[in-house]
Image 1: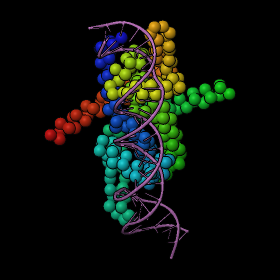
Image 2 (image 1 turned 90 degrees about the vertical axis):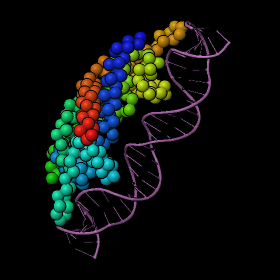
Image 3 (image 1 turned 45 degrees about the vertical axis):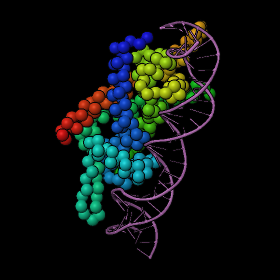
Image 4 (image 1 turned 45 degrees about the horizontal axis):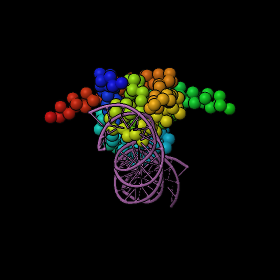
Length: 120
Length: 120
DNA sequence: TAGATTACTAACCTAAAGGTTACTACTTAC
DNA sequence: GTAAGTAGTAACCTTTAGGTTAGTAATCTA
């Protein structure tokens, strides 16, 4: 009961997790980053790739990503004006997070399917 | 533009991420798991350890964790009745996700502090 | 004998993330 | 000449996760 030292480490971990989730825990944030990494750099291309995202939400997420230093918005003046969202190197720091989440998600989906089969 | 093959891989990754976030993306889910891993097994101990969580929310999270196979609820009959939440081995599969998120959160907090200093 | 602790639940309320619809102004394709 | 694509914004609405308050019944503590 109440091991203070471990509780402190625990609280520290929880705070770090909190910081991470604040920035990348939104419903769409990491999905947009995945699509950007996949080479989809333009607004409508992103919207088409990410099923279910609305223009309003995509626009908001892209603004947040810019503010947090993950993405650069590049406007190429011409006719028509072309806007490209370029991933910055800071986005690479998310590599471990992304691959851990994606592979855990795949694994978990398999597990859920197997569990369902066993109950039939 | 519109490389169909890579777009499909991208969609698959996004779905896996979606599955993961559905299960562990709640505001409190991973915080509770961290506290459980730290050896806090009882309800009020967990509530004291996880700053800001209400009894209602903690109770809901613990039920979800049980349903998803992360936790076993153990009742020891006696006076008073003691309830313990035991982490199951399935929770170990989250190790990579947890450490990636925690260390990214720590790193990001440092970056934010440094960025703030630079603007002063 | 008032207060704390045990493990919660019921009922209610709020905020904010996200969803929907419509619209811009210009250009290219059919 | 009309439909679709370019990159969004404005205004509005809804959902729901989470927050708040209060209370249970039994025991122990100051």
